[in-house]
Length: 72
Image (cartoon, rainbow, N blue to C red; front, side, top):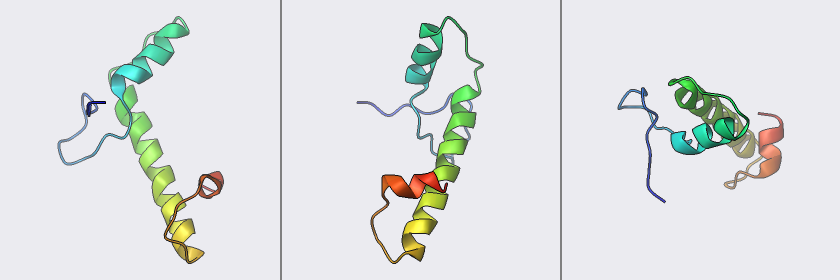
């Protein structure tokens, strides 16, 4: 799988979603997506991951688990 950056994300930010896949999901539902949707979705995912990492650290673990996302 190749890395794909968010179309309008600043070069210093990492994009953790694949823009083309986001567009495919939305297109399959008969809708169109805004050009900045992948960037916004990526920001939300990064925030969730940050909170999940903090929870794992607070519980003394070095492994982030799916349950850590529930409180994120």
